[in-house]
Image (tube, rainbow, N blue to C red; front, side):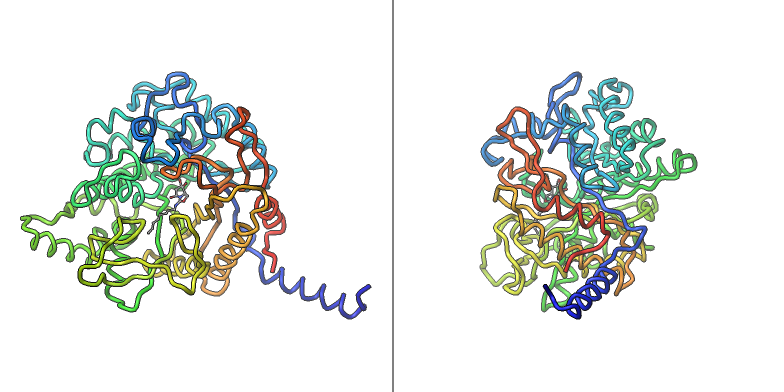
Amino acid sequence: MLPQRTVVLSILSTVAWSFEMKFPPSFKFGAASSSYQIEGGWNASDKTPNIWDKFTHDNPNIIKNGDNGDVACDSYNLWERDIEMASELGLQFYRFSISWTRLLPNGYPNCVSENGIRYYDNLINGLLEKGIEPIVTIYHWELPQRFQDLGGWTNSLVSDWLADYARVVFSLYSDRVKTWITVNEPSILCDFAYNTGLMAPGITDPEHAVYLCTKNTLIAHAKAWRIYDREFKPRFHGRVSVSHHIVWFEGKDEELTELVHEYSNARFTHPIYTEVGGWPRMFEKYMAEKSRNQGYTKSRLPEFTEEEIELCKGTYDFFGLNFYVARLVRLAKPGEQLGPFPIGDIPELDVKLEVSPDWGQTKSLIRSVYPESIRHMLNWIKENCGDVDILVTENGYGTSTTGLDDHFRVQYYRDYMEQVLLAIKEDGVNVIGYTAWTLMDNFEWSEGYTVKYGLYEVNFTSPQRTRTPRASAHFYKTVIANRSLPP
Ligand code: LGS
């Protein structure tokens, strides 16, 4: 038995600690997924192929093991189990996405699938019955293939295609869904799909397509946001934003680091969250000069008209942050080999990206484990995007290790959430919630099923796609129940 004094001291320190480590009462905890990564049912009912269906079927060599999302976690059939898991964890919200061609088989708003409507109705209603708020991502990278055949995100018409689709989604579900994400990670969407070609549709055009995509995703988001703002917000009082994938950069050369921030992050945030709008200035100037030196008459970065600048400005009700990556920045040495963007380096800026030996390292694409970086990032948003409500819409740890004892993921969640808490308590950043990526192992894009992020392990060899909670699921459940972190 412990001496009485020790017991009293230990109780006191636990009380003091849990008080300090307590999240504010309004703070919400959730988990996320996306349709292509979990649903399967790729050709069920009247659904037509999207770009990921075609990309995986045509390019098994790009995806690890030639995997695809044809069946994935089979959430098309197992959605009730997904709700049960969300409920077991005590989630306050579940962020999932809608598959465009499951809802609109020909992509256009004039033909809505009854089965598609029903599938998402069931999911939304099932969550609400368990007291879990549905947060819906309208576009998590699954463009109807027929639109890709017309140029996809490089065709400026895409903003109207997305806006029309968004209006259908808002009309169907706004009575029950109050938080919306228009586009998931425009930066990863454009930089991977149109620059490096690692994601569907696999286009490798770092000079032009990537910037057309950048502009078009911003306009598409802005049109969808304005549709909600004008036609739905007065009745349903919800909130709409983007989920931005933002990378934390550090470097000795401050000006270069700022340019890298503008190129990677502010290219997508500056047009939306600043009062002046348009492209971040240093990056805009850099592109104009570089393009001139390359012999182009015009900058490779497409211009915004005054009207477009106004269209995009202020189109947010909160800031959605997907956060995973930190990098050190330095100028490449003459003749130094640069890795492909954005996994390795940034050839457009002649910049080398590295992971500091002071940070934790992983073998995954993300490479860095640096919990303080999320706090830096939250402060960067506050300083650069205004004192806005921030919802962490994704954060998590991917590994090729299987098994239920994922103590490294428990540590990761604990340490990153601690930094979120410090940003709230010490720095006064308005972080309103945290979303774990992800509820269960799923199809991790070009990594196929080899990289696992799940709170629940999924057995992909069993036809039942059995889901089993990992140590991290038990941990997250306790955090949510106590609304506080362990030491
Ligand atoms: O599965 C995705 C998760 C996992 O890791 C999810 O669908 C995406 O929204 C999100 O992008 N996710 C993710 N991101 C890590 C991105 C690594 C990019 C490396 C860039 C290095 C500079």
